[in-house]
Image 1 (cartoon, rainbow, N blue to C red):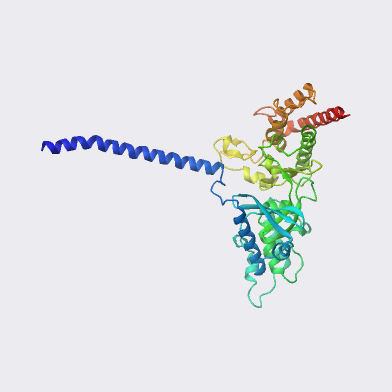
Image 2: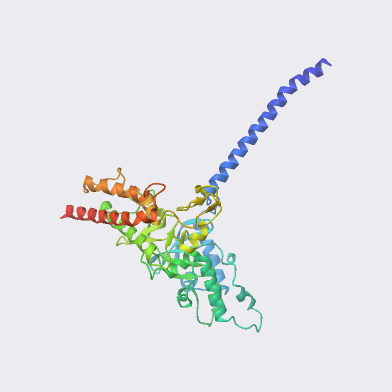
Length: 408
């Protein structure tokens, strides 16, 4: 009996230790699960497919198989799949399903893009599926245009006149028309493709589409910005080039605010989403997070319990606590975010050029600070942006004059 009691006496502390270990392990596991969830929320591409040459070549091989099988078509398909005039070079990045690849097209560097990997992953055009029956009547042109207009409205939040649909839709029936329709429908479901098809004629700050094959489309390859580059962009004469690029950013802001039927909002401003041409013109090369005013209002107007619930990446709204609803009006603007995320890097006190007078450096730094935070949290960004826009423009032009004077 004494032995049994002794055994129980020794077992009690052992049991407590075991339960404590289990609780500690459970807490450790829960901590890692929470950390992983937060990491995925901030960086959803963490578990995405690796951007490798092997995967990229496999994707393009599948695209060409679909082309030879008669499922899709496009002006670039022959060069990519038959003639060898469009040659894959390297994988640029994969992000949330989007595939971005660099290629050489007849000696010209281009970028191939698609929101999804496979052509079959895009929902098909309903009437086209039904029209496969023998003896089925052709799809009326008016019905197709109505569907296209509906898809564009869903994508952009805008209603476009039929005569503006030319770049988006094959208008003539003929050989391969069904493949053209299916391919055009897959492209229409990609917001960036729609922007790049419609806006370049209206603004030099948007990349034009060079051609497509199925659900992949090609744009010009330009040197993109990088947060790891000292000047953000690869530049030879940094101070003078930065002045030109900053002026082009201001020109882009003006275009996007005024030159379209609705203001175009940029909700993901970072160096990687912009590139520069040889003449220092800034070009938006990633438009997945760009929205016209009607779509922007639809996105912002959500339920909330505080202002932080009304932040959509770089586009902010305010929470009306009386009705727990975010305002549909954006309270910051493109200029404010560009000043904060681009100009601060160039015109802070730590980035000084001996060719620029201390007084002008100070004025620029103060103007960028005012631009990034116009009037503080209660300030009206839209009202303040007009005056600070012209102030920045004048100061940047003055900086160019000083730099040019140093060379003479």
